[in-house]
Amino acid sequence: MATRGFTGRRPAPEVADRVPPGQSITQGFPVLSAGPTPRVTLDNWSFALKAGPRLVKRWNWAEFCVLPRTEVNRDIHCVTKWSKLDTTWTGVLIDDLLADAGLAPPTPFALAHSYDGYSTNVPVADLVGGKAMVATRYAGNSLAPEHGAPARLLVPHLYFWKSAKWISGLQFTERDEAGFWELRGYHTYGDPWREQRFSGN
Image 1 (cartoon, helix red, strand yellow):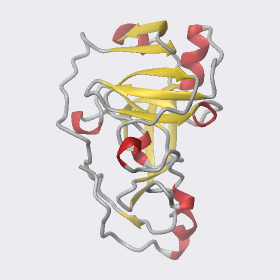
Image 2 (tube, one colour):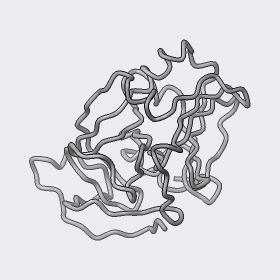
Image 3 (cartoon, one colour):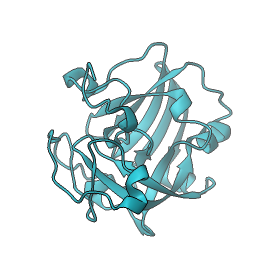
C-alpha cells in the first residue's frame, strides 16, 4: 500500500532541478501496489482500447509484440516522496496504439484498467504526443511481476500511481472519472512539480 512518507537521499546540486519539491532520490526501485501482485501469463494477456463501453480494438501478446517499439529514458516520481532518475523503458507509445487501431481519441479523458481491478484516470493530452507508453521492458529486461509484468502504463511526468501496473486496457470516457486512488483521496491529476499528492493540494 502507498504511504505518505519516504526517507531517501537529498538530491545533489547537479540534479536538484530534476527532483520535484518534497522528493528524495532513491537508487532502488520501491514496490508499492494497491493489492497483491496478479500473475498474468502471456497466453492470457491482452490489451483493449475502448470508447466508452464499445471495444475498438484488442491485441493479444503476439499481436502487441509486432507493434513499433520505442525506448525512453525518464525520471519517475512517486507520491510517497521518492524519485528515481534516468530510468529506461521500452514499449509501445500510446500514439502507435491509436494509429494501429485507426482511432483518433474520441474524448479528452481516459481510464487505465488493470488485471487486478485497479484503475486510474489520465487526461488524453497526457497520453499522446510521445508522453506515454505501454511499457514491457525496464532497464533492458522484461518487467518483473511486482513492477507490472507483462505490461504497464508509463506516464512519467505524473506521479507514478498514474502509471498503472498490469495494464489491460485504456477506456476513453466523456468525463474525468476517478480511479482507485483518486476515489480514496489522491489528487485527480497528480503533477509532481505542483505537489498534487492529495485532493485539495
